[in-house]
Length: 362
Ligand SMILES: *Cc1c(COP(=O)(O)O)cnc(C)c1O
Image (cartoon, rainbow, N blue to C red):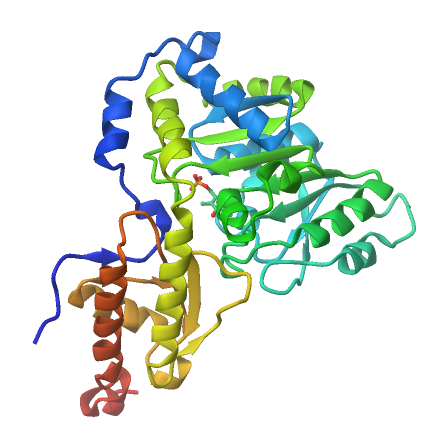
């Protein structure tokens, strides 16, 4: 029996697709030449985001990865040190960007669920200044932490970390790909989270459901330099109002509803935890990401990905037995319930490596 209806892709919130309303907003956008500051829709979005994050200025970039890479290049000179959690997207999923685009050293902290403490930061910074050590320059916070399981950095932790960073004369950057998830989950306004940081960006292609685009914010001076780097990297665009129109639409329609994604993720976490052998790594401050471990089922994560895909559910493998599922705008509650049934059936099958034929091969 197949439980398959339509494909339910929980691999990532990047799989989100524009709704009809967003497509309408894109189609009717007023546009101009973005590189010349002549696109009114882009300018409107930049103004709105700068205000939302309490910063002087903003710039539109095609992707979150480019926002991170620009920030590295503006804040740091080659051989300087960026301090971040070991799970950070910038060190795990950006093609080695810190080394190639900015020539920086990354110093990794072993935080908990992607979140490190002021004490841990202090420990890293507490070394005598000498000609032998690289110069620390930038402290990096990922809100929410992706590989940490969608966890929200508490405002207090951010403020404590920022105080240590400032005391050591360091800059602060927030990779806020899912910052608005943190805002909706915690009720803390975006500008409060953003306040201690020299640069903060948000991704419109995750839970906000846009086809592309991220907004990087900071001081006038930072954004002026960011523009130069963006131009150099080939990120200058032309009629980018089509991108900005989708983002403006998302700000009006898709922010509050992130709470639904969080509720769906929790439902998914509770359901997965009931499947024998599945260990759900659910955190109190989790949002729309569910990490779970299938070691006790006898399956590897990759085997579950393949088997679930066959039955109509997309999941991610993030280690030998570590898996990830993410909720977003196009995944209604019914899909979560169907996905749970499907994953349960898949995991009740015998793991392929335990079948007789496989057991005989070395
Ligand atoms: C997705 C993501 C990025 C990169 O954004 P893209 O728009 O996919 O380039 C960076 N940081 C975090 C935490 C992310 O989740």
